[in-house]
Structures are given as structure tokens and as C-alpha cells.
Amino acid sequence: MRRLPALTAAAALSAAALVLTACTDASQQPAGGTASDDASAAASFDPSTVEADEEIAAMLPDDVAESGTLTVGSDTTYAPNEFIDADGQTPVGFDVDMAKAIGAVLGLETEVESAPFDGIIPAVGAKYDVGISSFTINPERVAEVNMISYFTAGSQYAVAAGNPDGFDSESLCGVSVAVQTSTIQDEELTALSEDCEKDGDEPIDVLRYESQADATTNLVGGKAQAMYADSPVVGYAVTQTEGQIEAFGDIRDAAPYGIVVAKDDEELTEAVQAAVQKLMDDGTLEEAFAVWGSADGVLDEAELNPAG
Image (cartoon, rainbow, N blue to C red):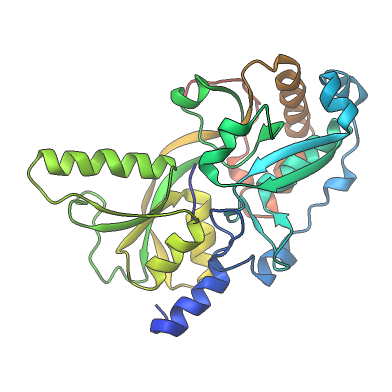
């Protein structure tokens, strides 16, 4: 995973904050502190229209079925994937819509709880039934938890409009790049920075933020020369900052996102996988993601632990 996510000094940062709050943490959006009104107004998918599937619901483990609730851990600061709406409280985004649709298929209410990104996986199976937070499937995560694929995204850079600093993604040594902590992009930049130092060059100035919104805000404000995040997040940030930033270069290293389930919870894994596949087969998942401009990334098959 991950995340998103210069007007004139203070004014620019203030406006950016309003647009960014929903990008990467548990309460943000693309330029400010919560989701923009335009973003929430555009969202029209209604998970309550999804009907329960008794056969799939019967696959649930007894404890989850009896609780009546699917508890989901999500870092709600990563618009348009998952972020907090303009009311400052309600989680929204395509991952949130999917989580509610999965719950509906299973005959459960869905409770999405905001959490720091790097704290979700360790809490799945204890605090949360599942983790849904744009987790890129990779071998390290699959070794720790089960992951059910549903969407594919890549990484992409963004720069200030017009690329005033002459950013070059093939020459990163000594460059300041904003990123959300513990994301795939953070890991990649860390490795690239180490390569710079081995070659006798300046390390990359990796500016790490708990919230994607903060990463985007600091690009808008000029502290960073670029930011690096998931491609849907970058696209949404460009829209929400109204042209103050622009995507740079091609989408890199496309890989699937996965829903996280505890490794030893076979029943819940199978039930969630079946629910996601049903939503893919009947077109519901594509419909939900289309609301957020991300229908093209929806997969046809909900695979368990695909090679990442």
C-alpha cells in the first residue's frame, strides 16, 4: 500500500489541508483534514442494496456469525481508497464501500475502525476480523497473514504543477520525496537511498509522514520536490488539489491489493473470499469502485495469496 495521500505559503497549506485529509491515515483527505464535499457528494454506491447470500454466510466461523458484525481495520487517510468524510467521522472510499458490501453478502453489519496503517496487520484476528486498507500483496505479508486479491494498482510519483524543480525519477539521490510511513513506496525509497550512499552519492531525503494527507500537503507547500504513492491516490490528489500538483511518469510495478485475514482463520478466509468473488461476478464491485473513478483496477478473480 500506498497513500496520497503551493498556493501561497500559509494560504496554500491551509487549502491543501482541506483537500488532503483523506489520503493515508485514519482521518484525512486530499488536501486538508477530511474528505472534500465534492468527493462525498459524488459517491453514490449504496451497500445496503447488496443482498445476503445464505450459502456464503453459512461459511462464517461461529464467533463472527454470532457477533453480527464484521470488524474492519483501515487507515482512513488514503483517498479515494479509504478516508474520512466531510463530517469528520464517517469512513468513505472504495475500500469502505467494498467492506460494507462484503458484510452485506455475509449477512453482517460492517464496522470500519480507523487505525494507523502499520498497526492493522498485527491486530487482525484479535482486534479486527479483517484488514482492508489498500494492502499491496507481497511475499512478506503473505508469510504473516492470508490475503485475498481484489484490485490492482501501481506506484506513481507526483510533482508540483510544471515540475519546477526538474524532478527526475531516474535520478533520486539528494532529492526530497514525501511518502507515507510503512508503505511499499517507503520501503522502495529506503532501498534506493541505501544504493545512493553505497555509490558515494547523497541519500534520498525521504520525508515520512503518518498520514498521506500530510505527504500531499508538504508537496503542495514546497517542502518536498515529489511524493510517491499508489496510483489511485496520486490521481485523486491531483484532482483534489485542483491542478497544484501533477502525476509524473508512468505507473510502476502494478500489483494487487489484498484483504487481510488471520492465517489460522480458514473459515473466515473462505467466507470472505467467496463474498468478494460473488461481488466480482455480479458486477457489484466494479460498480462500487466506479463511483471513485477506479473501476479499471477491479480484478476478475479473488485469489488467495497470489504470488506478489
